[in-house]
Image (tube, rainbow, N blue to C red; front, side, top):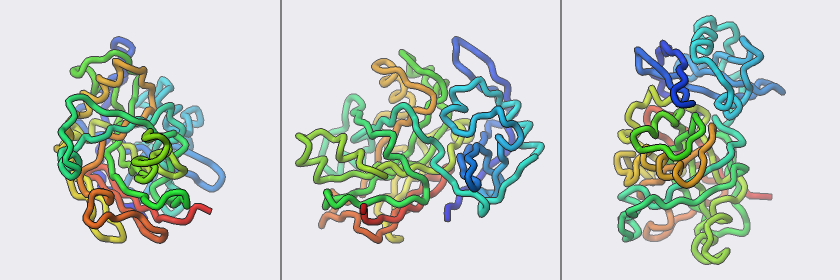
Length: 319
């Protein structure tokens, strides 16, 4: 079961095209909470309502709206139209009628930032990086907020890393720090599951396999529009294993903030709508504890970020 805090009033929005960037005007500075779901054999895109207990189906009201978030972000959608659908509530689904999926599936890129929390650097006695440090995960690692993390028999050192994830809303290339937020659509919660033995001593020191085994990127069900979170650097971020708190930090600790990360990356690669940036993890991961702690089959990983939501992923054997 997943619980979400909702602060919800509808956007008074229009879409304006400025330098090929879709921008939003809002009088309320509150935003929609997008979800992907499965209703029987059908997939859909919706807006979460009623403290997460119900979902307004966008596709149920307008079949021309894409059923997945990445396609929606690539389309010339109208927030005015979305607002109207939500107000009309032509098709409302109860949470117990549907399966919540990860809020983004099949993005072009999943980019991660290493050593980006002060506490995480401190716990391993490393200096704060002067420039962002990036690595990647395969998009195929993404699983849903209730899905199981598969514990590979090839690793004896599976670890947790709760992270705030940024989702790109517009094609982004060579943007300044001042303009970076124009290209952000919203935020969700993620786990950067890591095979520490592969990260440290296998694959010639390259991190890709350690970070990209199957199911190694649990992703939250709700994509919260940026208008609801005007400052993403003031959120509590927590991770518990079997109900025991392991990580308890704040995004205020970020060394390189969201606008800098987006700008820095965009000056090296083109970011596309739906691309995900995992912004780093606070202190408290298993590998730097004394004694070291690693995930076991049967464990339950609980991840939570204030204003965004919570997810719960069991750990099972990879058969």
